[in-house]
Each structure stands twice: as structure tokens, then as C-alpha cells.
Length: 140
Image 1: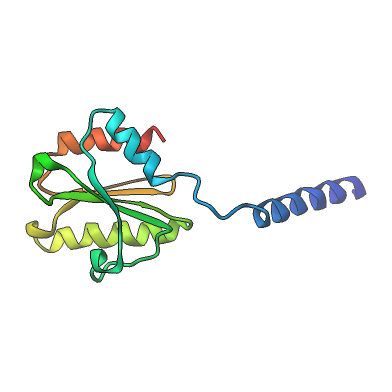
Image 2: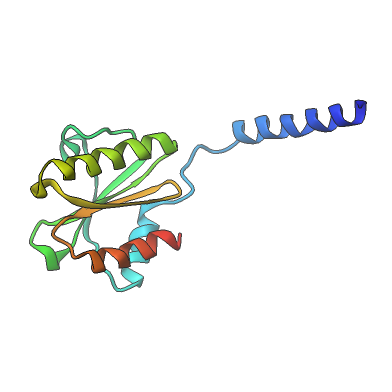
């Protein structure tokens, strides 16, 4: 009994100290995601960091956010990439975009989440093309 308790205590301490010592940096960097998209032959141009003005009334609980342009969709049309620390924050933003798209076809956008990464792309993009972006996100 004493051995089990000691083992349980050691495991608990490792979990606590291991999480406390983590750097807090997201495991995935969006510059790397953009590079992977381009390596896959996908459009991701004019990359810029997201600012509050870019988000409107959408929740801004992400660690890192980038806007990308997909020239084949139009001059200033594309999407956004996000990295989150908390899954709940990612789910909140994904839900925001998904629910917004249900209110009107004008607000529809494609979304996909994997791990701590969320991609949100213009609804002007064909679903088959968005599937290619999803494949890259899933490969991270």
C-alpha cells in the first residue's frame, strides 16, 4: 500500500512540475503552418499578424493569429490561422464562425480545428479546395 501511494505521489508531482515548467509557448507556430501550406502548393499570401481591428466582435482569446490572402479568391480574400493555449478558447472561436455562417450565406466560412490550431477561410472557397488546407492542418 505504501509503495502504491509513493508511486502515485511521484507521478502526481511529475505532472504538476512538468506543466509548471513548460515554456507556455504554443507547440505550433503559424509561420511554420504557412510554410507547410505553401509547400503543399496552396495559396497563403500577404501574411500579417491579426490585430483587434481584424477580429471585429469575434473573441480574441488566441495566442497567435495571422491573416492570409488567397489571390485566386479575390484581391483581399482569404482567411485566418490561429493557435490557442486552451482548447475551450479555440472551440469558442470556431463556434462563433460556424454560428455566424448559419445566420446568412453571406457570413459563411469554412472552419477546421486540429490540436491547438484553427483555420477559418472564406466561404468563397470551394469545399474541395478547403479540404486541401484541412489536410495540411491535420498533418501538423
